[in-house]
Image 1 (spheres, rainbow, N blue to C red):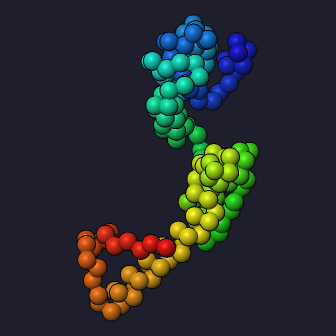
Image 2 (cartoon, rainbow, N blue to C red):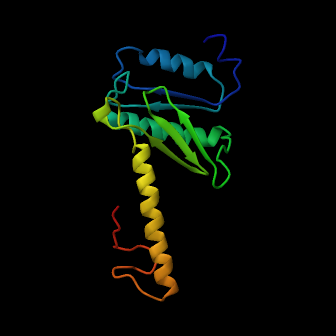
Image 3 (tube, rainbow, N blue to C red):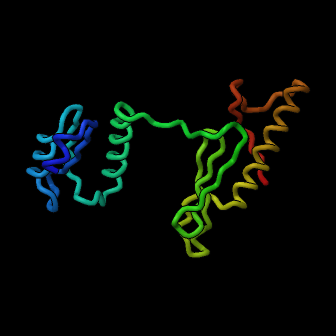
Length: 163
């Protein structure tokens, strides 16, 4: 690091917890001192080295995302409207799905021995049919000037359609 950091001309984010028993604060301070600006140091008070507390991980994720937005150019990899892309992940049946700018996860339920990280493909099909049915009923009702009980005028309705 003593050779790399002085030559690196990139933004650097260093994260450290004072309670980290694996990597001491001196290591983080040395890295920070060697780096050129722009550089940032975030203290993760109360976190352990592997971020075993979910709230520490969630906080850290938001810090990194906000920091990165300032310094990194993020490529817009959204798909054209109407195009669907599905990518199998390394976890059993977990699949990342992109539809235009929307991103979802599909998975199988725990009953088949996997993580259940998202709705199953069958749940997505049923959800699509349910949404289509609900929207069609609302469109037809609007054309016939029929109101929905519980509607607030902004498309938020208390109506439920189950399938």
